[in-house]
Image (cartoon, rainbow, N blue to C red; front, side):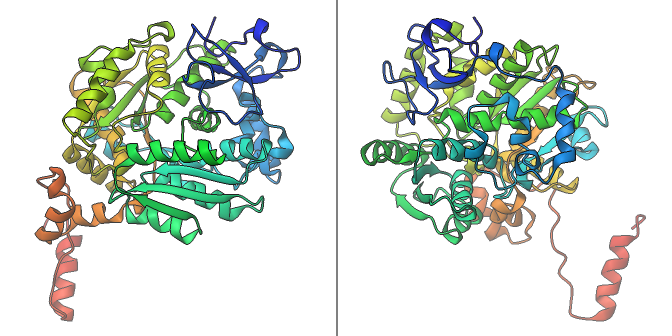
Length: 481
């Protein structure tokens, strides 16, 4: 039975949506109106599952286009909830939306040439256009809707930045009485993101430690105090993040690309994408599933190590968890912390590891790691093509380039790279890369192993004299100069 299919013996006649443990040897079920984010029987992750046989699902994806004519309806305006029929867990009158999902998919021939695919075949899905500036809003609208369903008021998360920004925006932009509590690690958050959490009024708690430490503590605190947890261990978060793939297909006139390439941190996006395509194929709305590439930063390479080196796999829902335990034990023994300029994916213990293994299985996926040097060079090429992104986003483009060099991606493949966050999420990294100040470069990037700015667009220093300025502009404007 597919992982998303209902288990009739376990549910009542009225349960069109419910939660189910992803461990097939357990498969415990819970009502959809329970705020429990790990299986109470075995402690594993939970899925949101639908009885598709009794739910109204369009016969073709193009039917969703009719929602564009109803843009004054907040649910139709939302780039998540206009696909309500594909994530129908919440009553419509409980949905919390702030206009998320107004994103674009744009080809970039400059990035295509950098990666090594044919012009027109490299497309960038720009999630930086969301209200908080990152893809997290897709998941937060779904999680906040569930929080409203269960009557939650205090909501919390651990964050490297984007999750906290999104949580704070949703609390401050709505009038449902939500109070935001955010846990961050010491020195592990970009100021562009921290500024959002502070500006939007969230209670921000900084602990000594990294993201993995902060996540452990927020889960303990949430359990003790009955606070609603907003990290991607929450399966409703992932339901909202499925919509990124729906919008990609929409922008491609409902044609399935050959590749989806996504940065890998806590592995929520890759898990959500795999679930989205598995469900679409099961419903007969697509005829094939694209391949998935998940890209780690070299300084936070857990997935690449577990899958590529230690051969950990989904194994029909029963992966060999002794592999990940041994790996995590070594991290502890050797005091290895995640370290990368791509702060959004600076995570050593991804909570959605098992769901990502499933997505890799469903999508015939691959995993790679790229260095901070590769990330920053790819980021510069993306920016030169007109879309600014944060460093973690550029891991997708750097990873596509690596896979093209290995011959895994072909020149004629249609490749979608997910840009997860806006350029101004981490402006320090961008300015340092392009700066002529070597001390600034070394302080921000050199300590991360970035040795050169191969595509730097450095400011030109000239005397405060009109003729000198005009002469500089003339040299810049003359293509023969």
